Image (cartoon, rainbow, N blue to C red):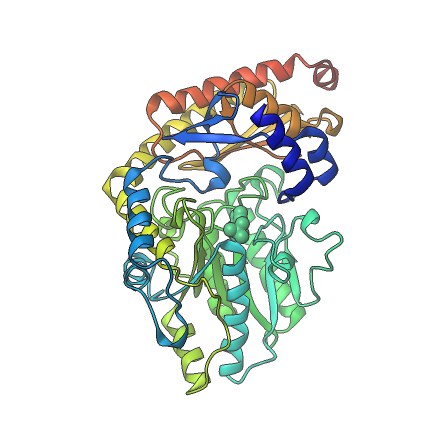
Length: 457
Ligand SMILES: Cc1ncc(COP(=O)(O)O)c(C=O)c1O
């Protein structure tokens, strides 16, 4: 009864992110009610393992009393403090310092946002200001990767390269350029890692030449492309792209909104390959989704150039909720949990997850298995030789998501038949095994669908 009335209220009033409004009105909302560890429970009492950590964000898992305590303590003491007028709060200052201490290289300066989209938007403003400060305002052209996702802000959505974020919104803008993705499973140059790296390096060089070296400002990359389908670049790819950016005198921006905070193993995926970006964005795992917060990391060179360029003038970029003390208090506690066993458990659980998914490779519907740590995907096909996707009419995203849900598993089911996994780092062996078993059951059921069978034949 309660749940039915919520469905009606939701239908009438709540606008959902990235949804077909009409489709959502028809289907109705599914209300999540509670969660503990890696398990979420909906309003009907149905329990599921959250194989996607909310939206790749609840890295610590649900129900940590110490996080709740940290937030409550901060709310009681000082629920808000602005960072404007040179004011500040202890948790925000401490969190910035702790993060700078752990960030790659000299990414020593942290600007806090409310999430990932405004972190990306902030980088665009910082980079423009940086080049103005250097006396090179013409360097205002930005490059990113096809299949990339860099959020949904008015400007940042143009760095994103997924069509639904563009159609009807007037982006990308004419200073936002793309080069092909590394997507090994469907790369026209084949799957050889060296060929893929060479092709990406050549594409970036060609793009900078086309734009003009005096115009190119920055190159944005996710260490693993998340929303594009969990696309993992070959080892050495990030390093090669970082090096070519240095050589071409453009800034290298690592978007670690998904990959940060233990998702691939270490605190930052850039550390996997010893990469030091010029700017780095994070969010999600920063507070493990308990409260909103993102962070932009600036290298010494970028920060000092901006500071010197402005001189005594204020740099006109700020948000009311930048460096929010409650979010910062949560961030500090989440960081403590990561370093007191969660990162370690994530590495162990990630190895088990990858091994389990690789065992599914023999399933008739599985064309590709990819991932690193607790960030993974399987790509479904009906013809392994030709890599033919599931028929669109089979509506894989809806059908498989629903089926997994009924089987007690939340996953991300992309429209093209890619299934994404990003479980909380706290998962036990039994929970990882259940993720694999429930996926197998979901795939077996899908194999019995008449339209899928027909496409297979
Ligand atoms: C790589 C990346 N950048 C930016 C964003 C945007 O973050 P938010 O949804 O917190 O605005 C996301 C969100 O998924 C992301 O995956």
